[in-house]
Image 1 (cartoon, rainbow, N blue to C red):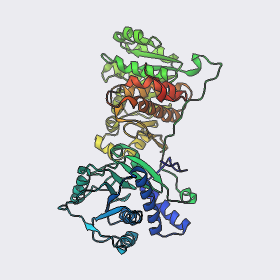
Image 2: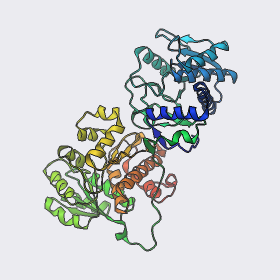
Image 3: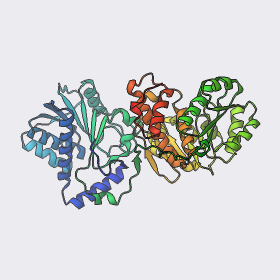
Length: 499
């Protein structure tokens, strides 16, 4: 994707409309001219990705997205391509009507869509049905069209937004175009980067259409995409005490792996010392497999208190359980006044006993845990992940990471970052425990809660992408540890071989 000065900025639909109005005023051009620029950018994307394609079919809605499609057809015809037009309506509105007239004035035909149509074959489908304004499910007739497009097995180019996808939230309330490439216009839409959008956007390109800087100046982005980062080089005069002491608390009966993964991730992310407070039955195995961790038997909750005195950061929740033992450890840990990362059953206990945090705290829920914390159903979280993560951060006075495709990081003031990395192979056991350990280690090394969450989420996801180069299916959490170490040091993790 070409680099633009605003390529990491993400906006709401309302903000995008404000930018577009400012752009038209600053450029002194008509809406149709801006449409023509969008069509030109779309044709450029088409030719880059499918240089051998000679036949395309463009599906146009009645609004401006359809207008982009009609003008793309005009430009494609001028470039020697065979373009077919299928429209949802016999009429278009506003600037889109002018675009349709431009196509028809050159002899172009328009086929009206109905659910009984047999569209025949084409080499490439272009989705110009609905743009950023759609906030409902596609109607039955249009849903049938989407089904036919997908059934053809031919590639799809989406203009601005895959139709059916909510550009604000990433929610798909019904049938939605699955694009191979989406070329989005003017500025990044936040809904194209999280949740279900991952299955629909494909390769995402941004075309700013020559919009001047002054059009963006009055609109503060709603969110930002994370940028790749690492920790600075260590001072030559350093010792293990310089980089903090993480204490991982958890591992009820049968859950030794959770604290093992969190503890080892904290070590690989650079914590100077890592302790583990867990059930006595796990001590021998953990000491044997990772002797660098200081493992302590805590069958009686009161034995935790002396360990807290030495810790600089707590990682609470991996394998903790919700029984009496886990609850007692949770209460003691949260009462210690130490910076902490809370995950897994640490969050489930918080859902039953809500509180605001007066110390630096990072919460890392997946959508199910977020739903329990907010007292709603999980689909409600996925309908608007942005609102959910902001409400969690506000309610608990903590930095919150809402995990999933396009993980979101929010602070209590509403600041929000979106993770552009990660892959479906990371949907396996232990990945959340790794993230907990990584963020705790970054807190221990001097990052504040916001820095630790953003850097930790980025390192975790990028390590997952490097590890997935050998395939997503079968990816293990432990596969991330070697590239994690490299990436944290600013080295190319992709070149590191697994142990």
